[in-house]
Image (cartoon, rainbow over all chains, first blue to last red; front, side, top):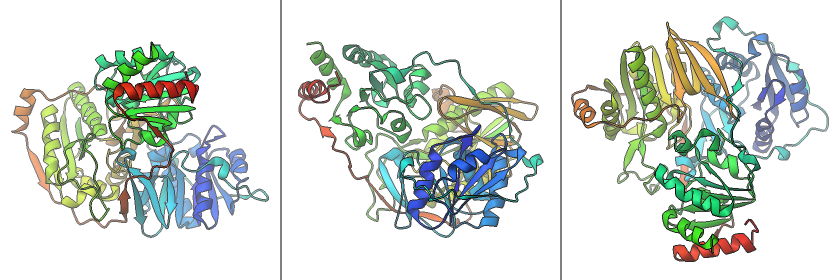
Length: 313
Length: 252
């Protein structure tokens, strides 16, 4: 049996949960879905539309606000009671916060950031997506699935709603060491890149802040906004609100030009919805070429000036 | 405040990856190596906390003998001393084995805080920090963008997804995984490099680990997409690209 741990915030189900249920359905065997929180009936009913053996809830005031300790305490007991061979979770920031501790607590291996299950092994990227590995694991274990690795609309719905059962799990709130405050958003983003028709985006390959003007000239010639991958914003070369990716903005412009961006998954999730993707990179193995419509392998410091000249003709 | 920072040595981003004959790991004998970048941010945060609150920064590294390179680098940037859990097997070990090795280095140090990077640039499981917290019996928080410490407690800013953040309180000792970009990195000065030569690196041997998962096969991903690769001189490729963007993709 595979136990899928659902994720939601304030009653809103995270879509990645449906993707993970789809992964469990493909992997085979009965699927149960766990929903943790306080007042989770609506979320339990929502995930119960999936073809699943049952939905098991842990409804406890101590789980109202997410904490790593609370989730580990709850799931440790649930796994001991339900005895799933496998536990599947979406590879979200929340899962990354508690799942490794849970795995260590119950002494089961955890394979993170998987993109598929193949002949009993888990396929996952390594070396920032430049390589892929089949990871073999023995005995009962946990696995997390990369966002979009499976499609939410590929999830099979059940003929009727799955039964919902409350698990008898008691959580000792005094054992929760993290004291969370209310989530908040930073000051409103100055630029809304999601509205941009065209985006020129720079990555590590731009090498230095002084070279940004080259990208800016290209953006101007194309009528595009300038954006960047995380390392460029980390270095302070462009403001954080110009960042595309899982920790920045998600965009789907008509044209996305990636200059010197290798294409780590954290970046790809933010831009792969673009209609036309251009990648210019000196590394022919860069993962960005996997999703590009047009690719040029070469030195961006030679190619970009040539593009600007061509556009301005 | 006594802070342990966990660092890892990884192959440089520029190194052209090659897979070994058994297809179980990379052929790294002739690779160049560097400090795992997310760990550099953890180190920088530790140095800043020490500058603010006093104390000591102890670098902990689980890896083969060649990891001395990044340990020296961390000492040159300002860490006080190091513990190196040395074993060739740790180069490609799973997260549990690495965390176990690091726990061995840290458990008797009596630290107030343990910092790690978010994940490694090689295997990238993103597990070691959180597993280590569990092994040390410490509370933890992950993907941290700001650290406030006072009177034995921490208040840290967790990054959530989609531009959301959250402050979380924790008692010390605690473990934090640090988000890249939390600070601006410093580089080693000549003086720092000279001073590092005199700093202590304690070597310890890890207990034999029992791996519960292993890499059955590692390979270059198959090219799935019909990417149109444009070749020729820069001028030719640029001309072709602009033409196709105008006429084929109608994106300009």
